[in-house]
Amino acid sequence: MTPKIALLGAGSWGTALAILAARNGCQTLLWDHTPGHVETLSQQRENRRYLPGHAFPDHLSVTANLSEAAEFSPIVLVCVPSHAFQSTLAAIKPHLPNDTKIAWATKGFSPDGGQLLHQIVATTLSRQTSAAIISGPSFAQEVAAGLPTAITVASADADFAGQLAGLLHNAYFRTYTSTDLIGVEVGGAVKNVLAIAAGIADGLGFGANTRAALITRGLTEIIRLGVHLGGKQETFMGLAGLGDLILTCTDDQSRNRRFGLALGKGQNPKQAMADIGQEIEGICAARETHHLAQQHGIDMPITAQTYQVLYQGLAPIAAVQNLLARELKPEA
Image (cartoon, rainbow, N blue to C red; front, side, top):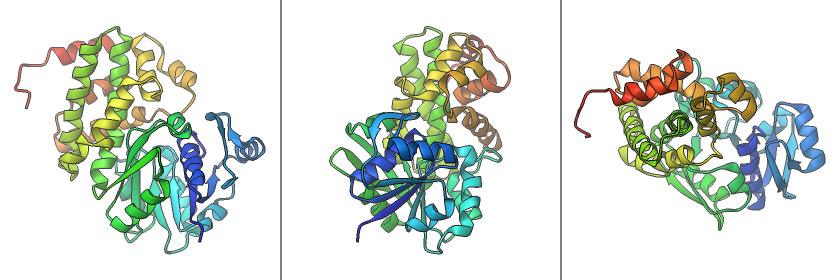
């Protein structure tokens, strides 16, 4: 039988993954909540708004009917922003067959409490629901263009991780599996905060030395929080940790980095958000990561200064000065 997969969210990343699955021979259904957007996708057979230049394969169809998407496949892959994650699950729940497996490519925390997304799946659907996350260094444009990419599929259900990895894997898209849901989730969320910080530093005109130090010390912050929450340290040295962190901190395809660049150059945050025109996950993640760090007593100074820039009006240059003025201490 031809494998099937349904994807929820027709932004750039959801569209890229849908194109990937369809190229691999999967019957693929891409859902979006905006009927007008879906109609345009159907007519143009391309997502010219978020992923221009990449035609839809024959195996890819689109819909605005949520029940159709829920019943299409035993695997549903959620690709909506983190702030819409819980509401999307709640909306699809009445339509899901009992044996449906849920995966997500969303990176972030719950915006109202800082829960990890697998916890949202357990409370909104069921603790028995097979759940998996896709994460790693992967810009949508490069995946759609067929450029070599490697990602991690993490699940407590090793069979499901292998099944999902198999659907996505091909000659240019390599999938690794992991059982460390927590580590992969934390790495994917917090790296967006650090990408904003890296963008700010570059926008202020600092150099490669600053960027390298920020990435390295930022990784330390991810590890501190992730291990405390139950993640495995080796996960943070892999694709979903260090790999994704390097990608988002150093390349201007990253919306979070571009937002930070704008702030560092003195641009108004609202105008920077409007110019980018897509979700900037690091803004919400900065708030939730900072609150988690305070709640658990985790030292995350780069995150704290980024939070103050975003939510307390601290000038970017003052945030840098605050970091440099910290007392001397051993690196490890």
